[in-house]
Length: 121
Image (cartoon, rainbow, N blue to C red):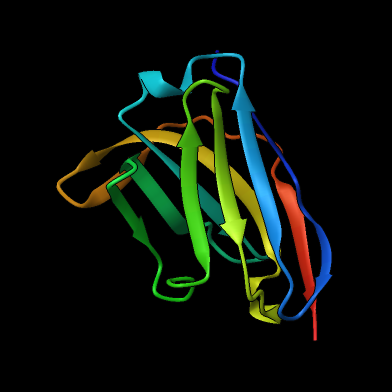
């Protein structure tokens, strides 16, 4: 069973930064793609960013230019650097392991507890 553990969330003011981390008991580089999702109460989980390799990443329009996804193979850790945070970024953030079909990311059904991000205005 693959376990994903997210951390790094917190409360920040608008314009601030946070870096989320995701670790696993399994080798994350064994998956062809990794991603971050977020979910607000009562809403569906939303894909924020995914990466296939350092030169093949994609982002939701709402976070382009502000968030950066990266993977450190040596540390088996997935990161999401979040800058210029806005109140609408407030959500629980989850990391994901999956694959891609063309340019579409497809998550496997492995989910951690998530980490809460709260941005105040």
